[in-house]
Amino acid sequence: QEQMAESGGGLVQAGGSLRLSCVASGSTFSEYSMGWFRQAPGKERVFVARINPDGGTTDYADSVRGRFTISRDNAKNTLYLEMNSLKPEDTAIYYCNGAYWSGGTYHGNVDYGSWGRGTQVTVSS
Image 1 (spheres, helix red, strand yellow):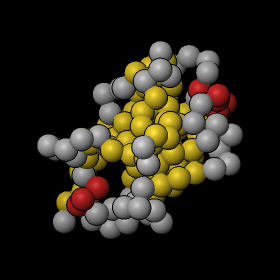
Image 2 (cartoon, rainbow, N blue to C red):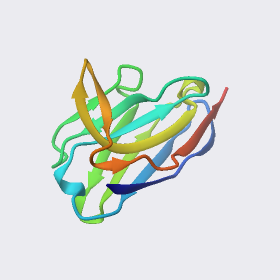
Image 3 (cartoon, helix red, strand yellow):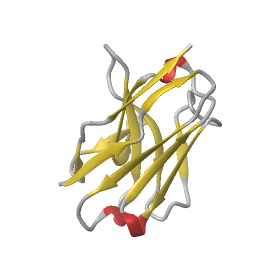
Image 4 (tube, rainbow, N blue to C red):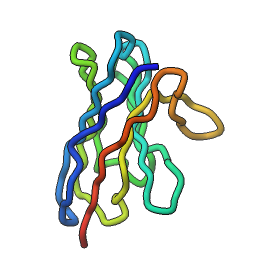
């Protein structure tokens, strides 16, 4: 399994922006679809955004479409999430991992990577 290291979270006011980064260890990053997931207090981890291996196709959860942008740099083994117009309901720990489609949504591909510690995003009203 590759290891994920997320960074870039913080405290921001509603309407603000943040850019998250995720660096993957190992040498197979460019072969996998990658995704961002988030877990709010007391809730399950859910899908946020996904990008295919060459970066040409993206998918978003309805709650973030039009506000968040996922991208990747395969030369740097790095995944990004640009978050704009943040809302208090975006408050969560954000994680990255490989992503696969099943049962109507994307899930973390734990055959590819292990979950990192995540990065905390807190949006104040």
